[in-house]
Image (cartoon, rainbow, N blue to C red):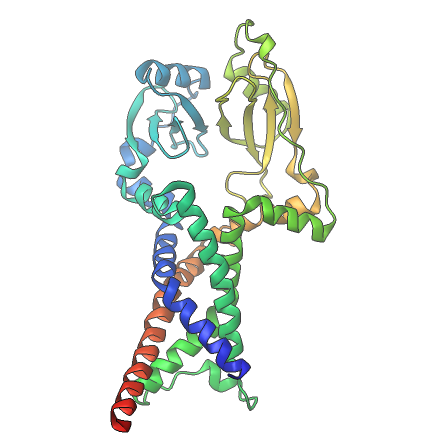
Length: 366
């Protein structure tokens, strides 16, 4: 077999093996690009507060939720980012019970399990195939195979006689088989760069430790400092109020607080996450770590002071969700999410036609 035939076989059988999974990933990703806007429309009673003079304290919100749900444990708290947005308290894990609290009067507005809502179910399908860590790994491997498919597709697209323009055109008046071929080829070349970016950034979200180590090695950057630990010997002390630590975090870093990560283990710190205006990451990548018992500041991680490797890695998630360029890139990400459907459908038609033709010729020979 020639090199081109080997590449063609790799491209074909990889596409047949993971094509449906890539379609699923692309379509669900397109929905999630505008997840917050969709949820605000579908669940306004949970997502919106009536703005008033002063917000309810975070400690009041946490105590109200703990009192209403004594059998569940607070995990994350999303801070309101607009005057109308509510508090969101995630219970037990990042993907379990979501409790919404009015930002001003501290009243619980309602709750739901993530898998019980359309966008929540779509998110779990997109990120873990509804099967936890095993689904994440399957998606990560599929993203790696998509990188291989994109490279082999580019090799197959490359014109042998240097007629590059023909590879970008679709002959709409040609026979439907030719038109199908042109759609597959042109769609692939127009989206290949974006598919590579989406696949690589998706891989980085699954195999994050490997990718950050690779980026640090290439850029010769030091790794991020390990999260500090709380001192369990101080557990006898009265717990500091959350609002006091919020004020202290604001003093340490003058950036918007986006999330509060509540400690789940005796030695874990309480983490306040922040976002600077100049960051692309929607949640920010700056952190203030507190001892959960004494309220002492243990570590401050300012993203603006981060190493080159860390800053590069921090851009991968915003690229993956189309957040860097605002609405235009989000719309582009929706289009890219639809491309696996087009490429798989046209590729499958090409493969099926060739298979039928081979069967026909083999019958003639017999």
